[in-house]
Amino acid sequence: MKEYEIILDTDIGDDIDDAYALALLMAENAKLLGITTVYRNAVQRAKIASRLTALWNRHIPVYAGESYPEKQPLFRFEKADEGDVPNIPHYIPAEMENAKIENGGAVDFILNTLRARPHEVTILAIGPFTNLAAAIKKDKDAFLLAKEVAIMGGDYTQSVAEWNVLCDPEAAATLFSSGVKIRAVGVDVTQKCTFSPETLGYLRALKNPKNKLLLRMTEIWIAHNAEKGVPPTMHDPLTAEALFHKNLVRFETGKYEVCLTGEKRGFTLKSESGAKIEYAADADVPSFMEILRQNLGREDKTDA
Image 1 (tube, rainbow, N blue to C red):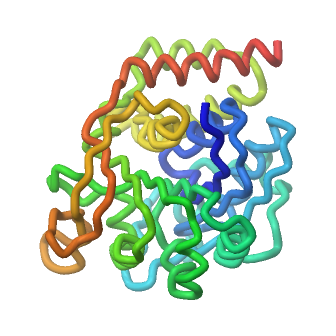
Image 2 (cartoon, rainbow, N blue to C red; image 1 turned 180 degrees about the horizontal axis):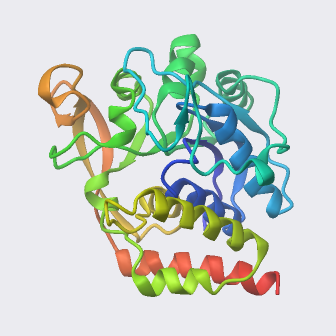
């Protein structure tokens, strides 16, 4: 299995899939150089990530990044926000308030890491791309030292504006037009990766502290989304596991750009003048769900 040096850029704390992506990176024993957080309340998100990594007894530096997009107003959720400071649904003060995060900024960490390891580091970006756009604007030459940027973002059937792009379309456009190598897994593929009742039952039966916190966060997500009646969907874990299991996702090449105006603002659209990227065309969903179960189950046996 190919080893990747990874910076994880994440909006962990809203949808539950970011937490599972991080858990799977831990279970895969990925060479995770650091974690940067983004959108709405990056500090709370950083503490969530720090607490989860601590359960694996691994010291991985976590940096709070940009909380606000350049132009796009924040999407707020009534159950999650109080006053002017957004609170993140999966932030559990009793568990996470004292979690350690680094003093430095996320953007500087990204750029310094790329300068120190030119053409070696994969940025795994599974949230809005505000941190990455800020890094590009601060020092594009340094950002282009990334080996590649693997993103969960976009819809390459051009049917919807996917969340990570829609939260900050200008940032996504900056990333796409930067010239960095992009490998994208879009919502048109990841939406197939939903938890069945059997999978959820399997997870509820796991006992180790790592999985117990994941399950607690999962139950918060289920309660928060009860009115929608949708199961947890593993957008970000599929993107992460595609790095380690090459046959999980079939990629094709095309030219895409991010629309910034009109009714299709936030769409990823085919364009001859767009960026040439690799994008997911299909995925082996049964194999992916089995890898997820095996990785989390192995952690349960390890701690038994």
